[in-house]
Length: 314
Ligand code: GH3
Ligand code: MG
Ligand code: MG
Ligand code: MG
Image 1: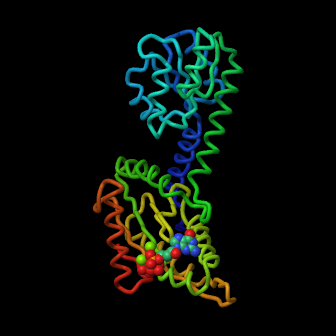
Image 2: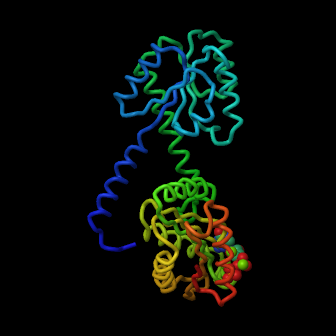
Image 3: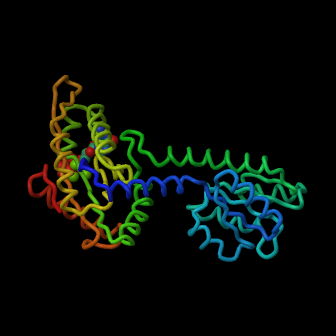
């Protein structure tokens, strides 16, 4: 989207950068009724540019997890009410929290307690009093490693775009954000034309190069905050924030021309070109949730195919 940048857009961009920076600050949820420990942890994380969220016990823990979306949790094994062990075991049954780093802190460090913690899904176990540098080191390395694992798991290997799962997770947040701000969002589905025939004629390896080529193009032609994913085999999804369907159509038309002009080389040494079709749905108007937008975009994609392919419908 290469429009000139005016001053309001510029200040919005700066604002976005600031909130991105804030979003990059790790949040640690501490579940402990030990005020001294919580105070110590708060000073420690504050001093290292991390955000501390706190609960006295496990009541409302699921709501608090949703709200704070922490990068790690520190749980007291021996707090009153539901035991830290049971809480940890419960969290590990929920897919969203299965790879969340969980560090136990405890007054009692007997073998039974440590085994119960690790069996319950804990990643680490520290005996109180906890040395501040050690708590920081253990929490930070686990956050860093889980971020790296996340990044790898969220990317499709061939195209470098988001996986379908990662795209769906992120698009829900983008949709609620634009709705809150009263801005539009364009949800696009792309599908390569006659791709089966491309593979049959020029070979699968050449087909893979086409997919990777379109992936690279989509990677480079949008704003950072726009989502680009590989939806399935030769299908791609794009969520363009703050733009309506008509603008998205113009953007995709430019990409369509650019992509269509690329000459790929087949296994037989022959060169060939590829086109795609697309359907676009928008917020507001076509739905409030990702699945409604998807359904509408898919219907329009189908219509674009039926109308002869290499077309974009919105
Ligand atoms: P249409 O224009 O109607 O979309 O026709 P099409 O041939 O593109 O659609 P169809 O659904 O019949 O075929 C999709 C093809 O995409 C079949 C499949 O082999 C190919 N494909 C899916 N994933 C990959 C992949 O990762 N690599 C390669 N090379 N081909 C893939
Ligand atoms: Mg298809
Ligand atoms: Mg196709
Ligand atoms: Mg098909």
